[in-house]
Amino acid sequence: MRSKLLLAGIVGALLASSTCAQAIPLFAQRYQLRCESCHSVLPELNAFGNAFRDAGYRLPLPKHGTTGVAIRYQMEYEKDPAPGSRRFTPGGVLLAAPEIGALNAFLHYNFGAQGGPAGAFLAYVANYNAHTRTLYRAGLFELPLLQSPGQRLDDLTEYGYYGAHVGLNDLSLASPRWGMQIERHIGTVRLNLVTDFGEFKGSAYGGKPLTAQTTVAGSPEGGVFLRFPLLSDVEGSAAFLGGERLISNGGLNGFTDAYERSNLGLHAYAKRLDLQAEQWWGNDSNSDGFGSALGSSGGYVRLKYYPMPHLYFAVRYDAMATPLITREWVFYAAAQVTGHARLELERRQPLAGGAGSFGGALTVGFPWPPKL
Image (cartoon, rainbow, N blue to C red):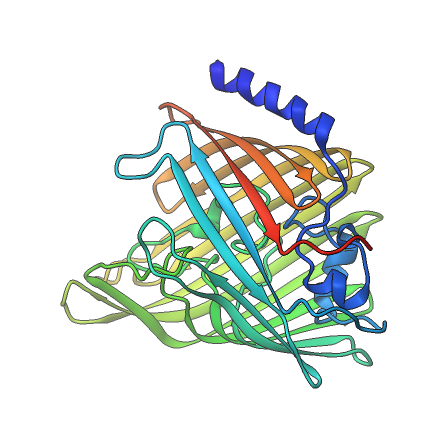
């Protein structure tokens, strides 16, 4: 009860104090734009920000400014941390996006947190062909999911099936991949083709997990991701991803697991409301090394309300079966408390019983841009 009252009180303060977002000035200074042109509540992108990203972070405008790198620092708070975890957890990200001729490089480098080492999370080069409306990426990148799993999370809890491990296959949808991506707009349809040869082996902050199990790509992974309009302000999506894992568990003989992941999704807007939902289905042909096939499924439904452009209230329902079933409600709110900082509060409540948890985070981006 206390955490709910605290959430209501602080959310009221957020509503009273929210301001225009200014965020991190990498591109704002380069193109002399206000940062709220791309961001709603940092690091979340609005429609223009997503279109800018889809075009390889380039605009047909004169370039100015000297900001080459920026830092996003976050201090996360948990009211009741798990045993061995901190109540306050610092974290930070260094971002860089230099232009090299016709190429645009992008680096998302996570600083160490909770004793783990630092490491690159995203590191790729991109080229955008305006004539064919095609974006090419090569390097370490995220899968083109409806919700960015690691770079622009709008809350503190991973989305539903994104982090799922199935049997001994530890490759999740949220893991960045080493490979190539082609994204092309064909009329009103967005087509993404992905092929990759390995994944980022580490935690969200770059630390490599120390386990007896080792898994690597047994063959290249391939994926097709589609987004298409259904109605005005309603977008559908579908995806298929497949590959093969080579798994060695505790020094035993290795085995291969051929896997598939597919989904259907929906994203709809209505004035100040934003509804997004996904359902994933998975199949692993050899989940344990003994030939056992294992199905999995999961997804989420999320509803967000924006009383003003830089403040939102949200509720999300997550469900997953791998085959252990978990269900959870996530209630959260976030706002720009200054032009460069986001304050977020979150309440998580599992549906299988047990106590819920309450937490929050303050996210700050700097250096701050001059007044534009």
